[in-house]
Amino acid sequence: MVDSYTLLVTQILLSLFYKNNLLNSFLHRYNARRFPAFLCQCQDAEQDAFHVLTDCDLIDLEIREAVLDRLVVGNKVKDEGELMQDNLTLLNCSRDNVFIEKIIEIIESNVIKFRKKIVLKTKFR
Image 1 (tube, rainbow, N blue to C red):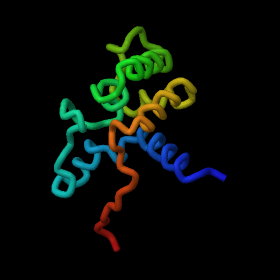
Image 2 (cartoon, rainbow, N blue to C red):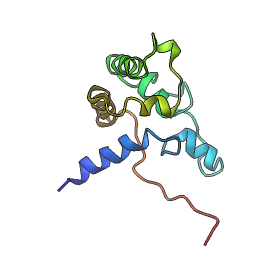
Image 3 (cartoon, rainbow, N blue to C red):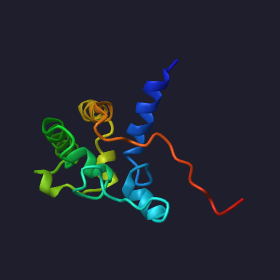
Image 4 (cartoon, rainbow, N blue to C red):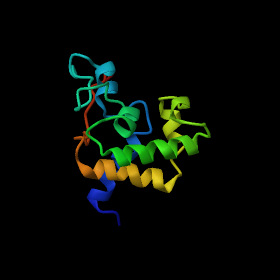
């Protein structure tokens, strides 16, 4: 049986691999009136998964460098400058244990206040 904390961390982790997630960038594109802020909590860039995992100054530099290293290896590129900043780049490393451990460190650091859930209203009933 999985405890609720492990389930929550897993849900946040998995959501980072998808374009439609609980980060400000997607939610703002989905409904700018309801989610007016698209910036990360660091206020330096749009809050998407790639920014949070690799570039956000709120995240420990050693962790971000480790994530970037695993992305370079997993995507078979020469250096981080060749990485596409998209969800497919992240998905390519989803089976890399070190990569996953670093993402879990980011989530558990609680520096970024990840949304746990959100109810999106649909137009269909």
